[in-house]
Length: 635
Ligand code: WTA
Image (cartoon, rainbow, N blue to C red; front, side):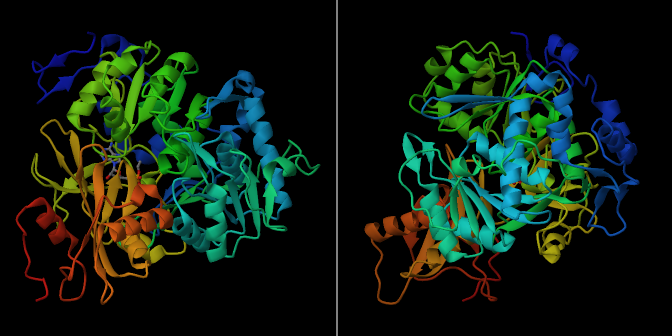
């Protein structure tokens, strides 16, 4: 065993020290001094990082904080993230290096060198241009996990349009409201995607969403599952047909962009109301994803990196699409479910494709762990060098299984804490960091994180408080799309000069941060971010329901599960059949991941005198915990 569990050092608790060979080979060999330096001169630190990338024109100012909290980075600089993710590699040996290895759930594989990826992206970009897409537009992308998803995102960025990717597991209303908010004229979708041997009917869902939100003028349909789908004349076009046209040639100039121009909008659940469009930019986001991936996962040319997320979430944006390509890395992408057709699917692919880094979510680890060690043990996993997790706190039991059974006690686990809003890793180990199972350890360079009380004062060691970030960073969201007030309110109003993450955490004696969970009405279900408000509004959109409340309760596999309470319209009675119908209704509106675990029919819901549902109280009651302060409860 090269990593020792040690209580002999000065550190508290269960600590896994990095093996000397890991430290010796790591890109960053020392944390403390560089961290200190990065906080003393963050602008200097980030300017140096930005210089590792190419700019058409250099910036005049690294950070403009004159209009805080609307921070700007690399002001005056001109670049395009696609120039750094693709164009610049084409004049080096990387031109012929694999950018992407893709495996479909049914078993087919496709590979793309940087040269081939660039041809595909340019062709897609020309198709978009021919449909009138221009700088400043937002194109909505609703695809399964297939290479075209990457092509489409990069094609938008290349011509200066922003993308709004909607996760392929979302359904009608989720897609419709995102299309509406972005006012997209072009939608890119597919006939379907494969999941557990079944077709997810993306085009049917898209048709229903387009009927609700008629802003879409052109819909590009990628052929994937090949069943018959409805194609509306004059609106729907097969991608296969479009790329055969002369306009779809494989050369397309990359549009020079201001550092602060929007790269994408990604909708995510917040405390109240509808999902909000988190805005990220070409310059700062590029520097941040490049730096974080390089330092934390120590990406090397010979690596095969597998981020097992979906490009429809921020993890996929930053660490399937942009980060790895910026580094000229080889990425692996798999379309389907981890346990299909058998629970060894992932382990078999790691062996076959020689994956060296695996980055996934605790829920996936728990899900695979339940099938037992025999499945991974049938495979040679010795190509693995590093492991990672993201999305929710990892329970120490799952951490130890991942470390022992998958990493053979050789591979350090990078437990990365971050958010859609932060663009990239914020609190995370490096390969050289002594690890404690369940802790995301210490802040990344240039990031000042702390745990504070209601007044913004740091809490004592080991006490729970609000997790905040005290200084701006280049990958931060710039605003909420079309709603700057909401940006200010949600993230900056509570502590003024500190970014409020919405998470609670504690800090131990060694300065290690332990994330506890969301303090607001966001629920992380299997690592997916959902809001109680979305589930509630889906429920009340059913004709039988007059009021609804949703809460998250702990779940062994999913981390949290959604439980709902519904008040029915006058004269109606609850039944198992109706509960099932409501669950399916939520699935149809938002997506299968949002289906409540249980639906309880009630006559009243606990509310404050001002009419707000007291979810905290529902939760306490469901868990049999003390009800706490109920002085605001109406009679
Ligand atoms: C949670 C995902 C504990 C947290 C990248 C955060 C985590 C929310 C971790 C953001 C982690 C993410 N440990 N909790 N390593 N990583 N979270 O926007 O509650 O989908 O606020 O971004 O996930 O979810 P989002």
